[in-house]
Amino acid sequence: MKPAKFKYVRAETAEHAVELLGSVDSGARILAGGQSLIPALSARTTKASLLLDIMMCPGLNEVLQNSGDVTIGAACRQSQIERSPVIQQSVPLLAEALGWVAMPQVRSRGTVVGCLAQANAGGEVPVVALALDAQFNLLLRGGVRQQMPAQETYAVESGTRLPVRSLIVSASFRMRATSEGWGFREVQLRQGHYALVCCAATLLLDEDRCVRSAKIAIGGLTANPFRAQLAEKALIGESADNDSVLHAAAQMASAEHPWPARTDLHATAAFRSKTAVVAVARALKDARSRCSAQEGISLERS
Amino acid sequence: MSAPDLTPPLKTLDDPSESQSPLSVTVNGKNIKTFVADRLLLSDFLRDHLRLTALKVACGEGACGACTVVIDHEPARACTLLAVQADGAEIVTLEGLNAPEGLNHVQKIFQQQHALQCGYCTPGWLMTVYSMIERSIHPDSPEVAQYLSGHICRCTGYKNIWTAVRLALGADTQNSTSREE
Image (cartoon, rainbow over all chains, first blue to last red; front, top):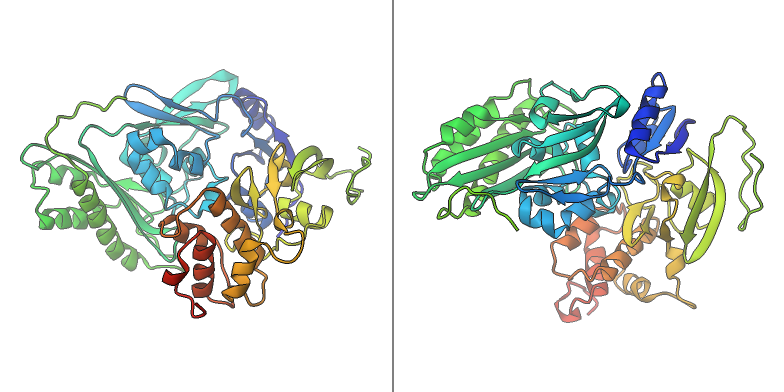
């Protein structure tokens, strides 16, 4: 359980990291918190000839609040974001989901953006990114900057569609709209373990407590998370206080996975499919309980 | 790169193909400047180079918590970090919490509550409890379970550990689940 030889370089800037990433044929890897990469190197299931540590790069450790979204830099640690008053107030879905990411002893070192880049099948952060239509801000060689929506990034059965030799310098998450409810539910083998399945959901209701807008993202069921768009559409106009409506939506959402459900040593595809229904229904109920119907959909500003 | 003159003495890296980097850390209040192999894990640096052997290496992948130390006021795994990643950091190991004589306050509670048997996982638990006390975590907070889920004990069972941790966090003894009280 010791890593094979590699060279470690502390990148001076994000641009420096991207240039070095392209300077080696293959085997150069970006190192952020390293909470998945270092164990993988220790187990020698992953190889690297060059590790580019981006944690000291200026500007990457920032949380920036804009008019409608919050941008989280690639060096921001999960514990820092989980406890950030800005995130707790403006992106409460993310703060809640981070409580499910491994344990506090791992969140103290792991990064939010690192989860997005890693795209682990049992990871929580990509699911939140999908539910909130997050935008990933990429840096490519030659200083080229590009935005990629979460939806496009994970539109593949596993892994990501991120361009090769690119770095996610930050990710922008939509702020909670006034009166918007949110829910994050997960089923795991034990606390701190990866998700067997998880669901991130948001709801906006009208004055009659009928659904005005719903977002449902499911993780763990398939290797990459997906948005349950059929269920989201079916919910619109329905009474949120009718439990059977939410249960029907959960059934529909769990069935519309674009790729086959996963079987691994922890759970079969059939078990995951059944469990997903439970997770989605609970997330929707949490979201409903956090909705306040009076106000419109103008964005909250602070 | 010639091996620098070091205090405490470090193993010389003889292999010229081994990439090395400078490392400057504060461990238990002591500044250490040295060179280490890039691939050296922090757990091995602390145990083999600095001879701080309270932390244990068990799973080597961050799951079990036996190697937990406190880095910049947060509990973290020493086995899922490279030593070079800790450059500039302030690290506390269990040796840094030793009482001048005998056991420190939390160790005494663990002893009284029978919160350990073989003791292999105990140094990790103690570091997490130290962090929880530093953060003033309330003994009834749901965060207690989250922190404790970061440790695996294979012999004592968790009930006594749970009681000891709650007591260390200031829980009322009367309301604890201890058999002793």
